[in-house]
Each structure stands twice: as C-alpha cells, then as structure tokens.
Image 1 (cartoon, rainbow, N blue to C red):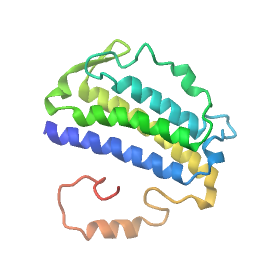
Image 2: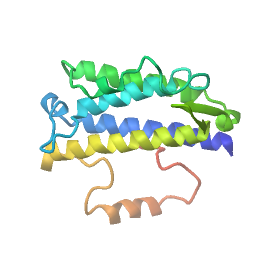
Image 3: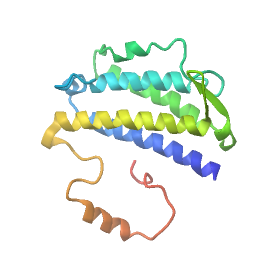
Image 4: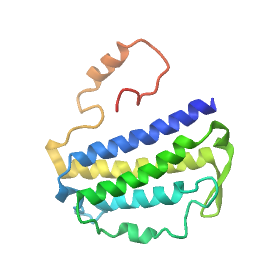
Length: 185
C-alpha cells in the first residue's frame, strides 16, 4: 500500500509540472511577465515563488526544517527575470530538487516526522501539503494563461462540450486499476 501511495505522489507532482509547462508553452514572452488587471502575480513571479518553495522544502527534506534560513521568500515575489530562458531554468531547478527527493523516498519513510517552520508533519502529510500548494499555484498559472490567450487557449483537460466524447472513450476501455495520469504525458 505504501509503495502504491508513494508512486501516486510521484505521478501527481509530475502531472502538475506537466500542466504548468503546457500552460506556459502557450504564452508569449510578454504574457509570462504580465500582471493581470487586479495586480495579481504574473506567471513569472508564481514560477519564482514555486521554485523557491521547492528548493527550501525539498533540500535535506528528512533532516532539516523545510523553511531554510537561506530562503528569501519575500524576494520570490519580485519580478526580476530577464527572459523566458531564465524563467524556465528557475522552474526546472525547483522541480529537479523536488523530484530527486520525492523519487528517492522509500515507502517506510512516509510516517517519518519532518518539520516545516517547526511544525512536525509525517512525510505523507508534508507531501500532501506541498502537492496542494503546487496545484494551487499551477492553477493560477493556468487561469492567467486562459485570460491572456482568450479564444486561442488550448484546453489542458476535457474541453468545453467534450465530456460525452471523453467519457465514451474512457468507458470503451477495459475496466482496470490504473492512474488517470498514465498516458497523459
């Protein structure tokens, strides 16, 4: 059971990375750095924050607090990328730290206690916490992408009006135990 759970976490993180990358690929360089009318964070700022969080949380995950003394969270919300390449490098750096750690976990470590700002979490709880946090921000990236692209946006899930077709395809498959992420990436 714990092995299956750990595999599920790995696939879920990969799924949200995939969604973020697919959303950003649809955006022009200008749109990556554009704040919306409400003054929300740009996609670039969200990427910077996610990467900073990932580096802090997943570096020495099992042995040190997830809020590292070297992290400057407030600086993560300053828009200072020069171009798309810098943004993509930062995105990839954060995910590399996360993936190395999560893919290196052993099932028996899911009940180990780790700390985030001196609050103890079982590893499984910390995984849930971070998965929810990243899904939240990737959702923001997708929403900003949809707003920026308008009718040119290509759906990352079941397109409007496409549920019947999608469900027909799913129900034509043999019933079985599998992860919905399999085959998406």
